[in-house]
Length: 113
Image 1 (cartoon, rainbow, N blue to C red):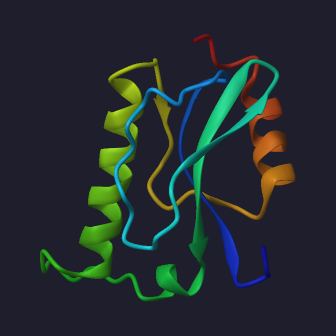
Image 2 (cartoon, rainbow, N blue to C red):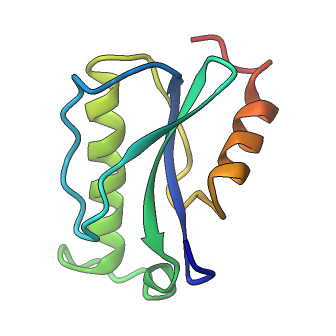
């Protein structure tokens, strides 16, 4: 991953195999994946950071903000249909896999799934 990209984090869930979960297709072309650490999993998808620079409070249904918000909601709902989730705030970005694992390590005592 280059410095222009990061991982958009959607939710914390159980860190286990979850191939049975049908996740929505994202407009970025990157499928959500699960990063495991200490029994927890972080649902993430690679994202171009410039995309978030295009976000504004435009109320249009086809705006970047509306598209990203709908995708965030659909990923969280898809995981929730099969596993318990702790949704993360829209727009939560981590730099890479190591940062994702550090986030999970920091939340481990707070999360009971």
